Image (cartoon, rainbow, N blue to C red; front, side, top):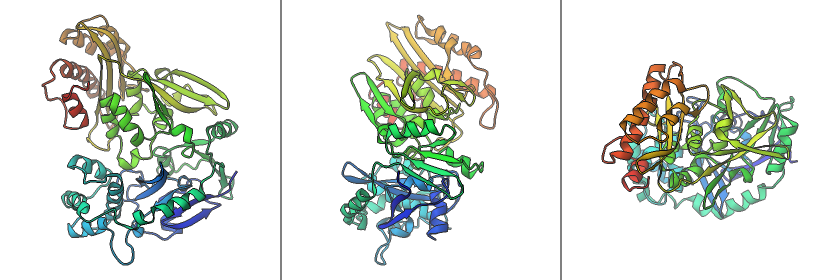
Length: 494
């Protein structure tokens, strides 16, 4: 085991041997490094004022990603390069992103500006050519501004591509940075503490992770910390033992065969989006609306499943598609239908010391209908009130198979058994869908909370079934906002 974390702060190496396992990158930057350009706004990964960029080697290049420093734990930086707003200007010259923000008046009060600058910097590394307006909106959705109205920032995002944003020191130094990061990386398990008995582990292999978690079943597992980070910053929890899973390469794999997708538990939303959208366009569109780019860069498919939230966005999608979940405790492995994993509110079929390792998703078969809809108060970066997903096969006008799942309607994400039964063997038409809509009364007894009333949730859940019918039988009807899923629908990808 290795008793230190190692990373680059810009181009300067850092080796830390003792720190609070739940210290955030934001607190480290401001308190230890005195780099105060990175701001604390919401402290929960919503406002983007704390945005920094983390670079990691991938396929012989550096991959730059914007992340929320306020909920990322310091230990997650092991083997990475951390870049803040202070590192962009070199030799007294602003970086092109900074210059574009200045020229186009993209800043007023300035508090949010460093976060916007870092999101735009990451955008220039991810998009070689200027992205369209929709892509810019996606990039900026995780950065909130109360002053500018966003228009000058969006103009800066477009203008920067005429200023050679990649002709910078980061491009020039990439080979050297890759060599430095390679020297920091190994297959050792990171193991350290804060000097008071609280411990941090970061294994690099699945066998080591499974053994470590079996030995420490009380430990808190953290992948992207998009949930666990809030336990710390908002609930003031201080886990005695934290195990970070982000160094385990086996958990980050995506494998596609002729029949299934194998998705490791550590695959982030960003990495899963394109491959899921390829086979299930609506699934990709829902994932595009999970959090922000910063959240999607760190949050994981496995984490969204393992935390068991009734409003998690991916479980209903995967349940409707017929996914199988894989778990491991020590050397013992088992699999079960994903829908059977969720037992009750806050309770899953997972033993102490057992971890989620991945999910198997069958590829959509020819003629199979898949629709998914996320309903929330805001279109972007909002928690779901109701999420409905339907996977149907209609043969000669008759429903031969039906899997319908909802999130936000019960204590767990689950299938609508009564609605499915009302459709099976029936004509796919208004009459059968009306019976399925009525059957939802027996499938769910939703709660009223600040997101939605029980009556609203039930009405939405019913109407999503009708929407599915309209989209599949009246393809010229306008049923959704423009976006990738609509474009796929218009091209007949469904």
